[in-house]
Amino acid sequence: MTYAVQVLDETTARPTPTPALRLDFEEETVTVRELIRRRVYEECTEYNAGQQQAFRGLVTPEAAEVVLNGEQVGKGPRLDWEKQYARAAEAFARNGLIVLIGDEQADDLEQMVTLRLGQPLEVTFLKLVPLVGG
Image (tube, rainbow, N blue to C red; front, side):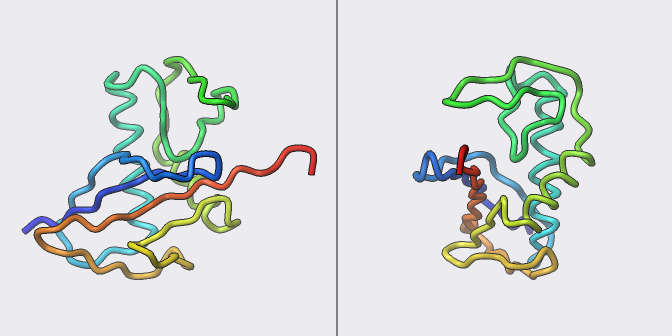
């Protein structure tokens, strides 16, 4: 049996969630840490395989320039998914990234999430963008 998660992306600049990808799990319960890890792994794998011209992942790669106003970073070097995952977990820990399981905010990486058979669970990743100039 496969349990599906529909990953949605949202930012403070674009408050309408947009579908990012779908993740399939064999287990009925997973941690928030595993949701983030699998998401980052899938994004980096797709990018490294050349399926994306520009990386549109959960966190901006260190080698990439920070891009504002919807511009895209061009195809760059291969991404190390473990480094990207560490950056995403750190962003979650410092509240730079909020994970919503349905309508509930996850507050811990070890929080357990129960998945559903037959209907994908919506998980929204809300990236908080710091204000410039305070």
